[in-house]
Length: 295
Image: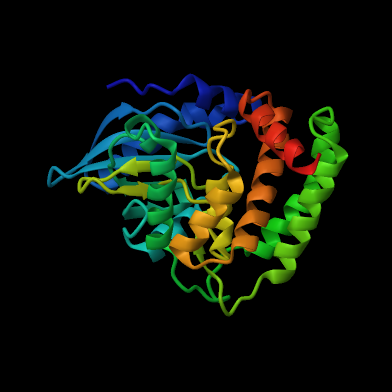
């Protein structure tokens, strides 16, 4: 079967100056198929950081083969999947980090396409996050929540200028304050394994009807970091975000203030970034909500 490279992935690779990788890709795919005894199927659309194709193992088990683009280190993702061991995240079947390749269990449709009620989606995302969280010490080579907050704080002012100041200065100041608070609050002794980018397109249905997370960023952080991304979900929904935060806190026992501050961090940074790359209306909806909060 000829290799079908999705247009979005091709554009990303060409824009980054890595076009030779596209020429090498069929050979890499064939080599991995031989190594892991795979029958390769159709390419899956949607990704811009990796080629993702259907695969079938020798025993007939359906799987997904993911080959990351140059410059994208699959190490943190592999670490998360290895530690999760199928709980809350897709099961990792094989890895070849030298070729940026991961073989994963094949899951079903995205939550976004199956669950119509946003409130129910938030509950299911929370359940998946809780299944993933587990204590993880400094010996595990993953960035911390403090590192993420610091990186965001360093990038946000410049990104805001580059994007044409798409939100108020007060909103940026509020986000920077929250980033600093979450940086200071990090404690290695209580950090857990977190996904880092939980939303309904990163949650796929498993055979038992539950949902598992894919594409983990991978952090050692407080659980509120993940719950804050659920607060960021569905901009423009019109619900009370304080009430959403309180529900997440009640379901998990995680401090509501920490969830709220991480929600602010994710909302503002993601909104400004989305505006900088023209990903609309997502960015505008996030920042409109953020501006309402700081008006």
